Length: 394
Image (cartoon, rainbow, N blue to C red; front, side, top):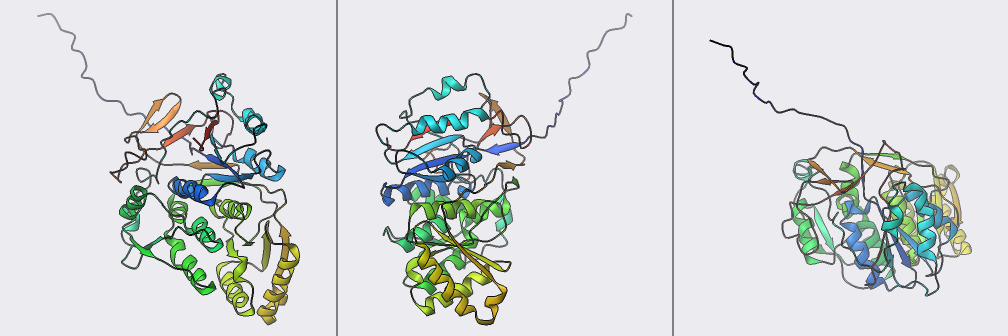
């Protein structure tokens, strides 16, 4: 009997690769004249994207961007640029932004992609916090209790309201709000701020449960960046520049705390004393850097004098500095996330194998999508997909 050749039984082959992932970054270029009712919708949307950790707001007058903000926009290396509010009819701002971002995009077809009209609306899908990458339910189950509540705001436009919203995040859309409360097993309550003590209590009570804090505490990231100056207390009359600077400092992975306080709460000795004590409890070190883009230097100097008087014997041990926000500052240049997940390669993007999620398809709060930009090397900015422009006015 002749021997037969028996084909070997096929066995599955497992291949393992380590991948460096960079979440999509968005830059919102915001006209300072845009109504806050419009901006707060964008803030709410931004809240759902990793708590806003990887996104930035950049102010403009509709014609140009101040040089320090422009440098920061370049260092941020955004993948998407959203324009909020109208640009001047003769403004070359989109082209200027394109020029400073282009050197980081090395694909030969970047010109073709970026030549599309800026006004062309295109939906994006990396919505909501990534529960498929971060097992929130298992990590939060033991720590969430009945006293962990989610803040529900009124629709008033006040300086206090602006400060509260940029610090804690919020959702004006019922579906997004319900998704958040379902994921984190929290309850909605109302919270009315009537004075400085209410404001301090609001920030203290809800800071640990904000989307930004929950993301920052649990998302594994690596960070690199040089900070030339870092305010630790931002005093504001509600200007967009102050709110955006606070968001930058709050969302970066630098461990030095930063506080935001409405200037209206710093008008009398009792309020200044409350803010000073609260501020010193929140921060480490022996220096206080007070800054603002909306409050005049002489008022900041007066505030510093009153804070020193409040400190008494401690004043000699604490260095206090004041400065306006018109300065150059170094910001994060690299954000990377290392996580496990099922991924597919689609059109040079790594797409996690979860259903696409849009504002119209978020009924199931357990499924989310994350489009991840591919990187040729860990921490290497060159080689990412080109930046894309969107106009939120349409």
